Length: 405
Image 1 (cartoon, one colour):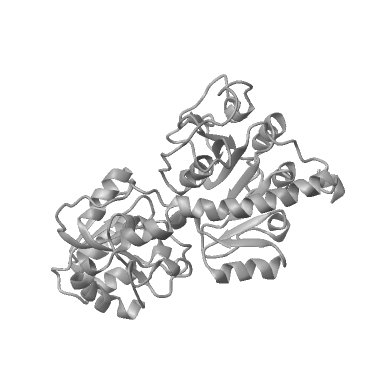
Image 2: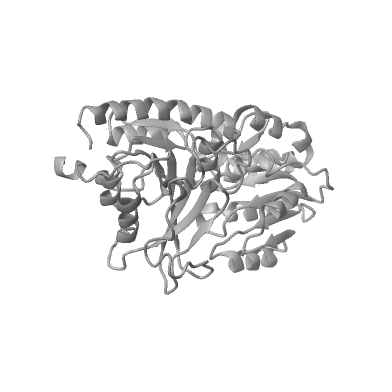
């Protein structure tokens, strides 16, 4: 273990965060950077370029928007915890990995994945860290990264979030490198502590907790459908529960299903047609956030049907658009967002009756007010910032004693 610790590289000069995505991109719609990138992932990060942004802090960042990948790092910048942020993807395919500067504090880049590795190893990513330094905060999502990369970032504060129902979707030798695990429910935190007694956990699912204040909002337009389900066309989202419920209800109950992606889209359209359900389908491909917001505003309430699902971001996104939420009572993570003011839960067997009830009671809730009071990104980054400060101080103490690097 001592030999492994010795390979940790220095931290970047600027306070930085890197979020390593749970996606593997195939290069279909890439913006490549020929002659600059190759397999190294693009030009140097702004946090490694001396004088690129002048000295000191970069100033306030108020535009904390986007998907769950963007909102967490942007919130860390907005709170002054870091100065620069990057999102990294793994890459496969014939075209070159891409680099894109999203704005003055956030960039996105990709690294080619090693073809002969079962895990998501990228020697290009590791070479990039060796060349430019490790981020102050490394956020690892989903199926994770190899131990070799985590050891390179041994001086970083390493945070993990599974984005899914299993608390840890990585092997023991990977998870033991984490400093903090963000979970979606207390049962997940308990599972982490069973594997790693004493490891810090925080129930703070990044999707619903780091909600963007005005990305989803009421528009005051006509409510011409009863409900909306914004979810990938994949089995774990359990559209079958919704369809079974609608099949038991009068056909004047109208719904919208929005698919960003997923392999079941055509099958779900076919089943709805066979059952003569009143469902309007949108996507795939997905539509921009503004259009999702408009579609939400046409509905009286939103639904979440999944069981083996992480705490989906759509929970608070519905609420910010002014929609109460009907959620599956067996949802693995995220039921803490369903309180008397924001919605109700029902089992699969009771979903039809709950839909009928919410058709008439949706206007009695105050979901947006509750989210603004409790779960938008300023609240969540304050909670995260406090534990980050404590863990960073502890890690710095260990480094000064020579026990890490």
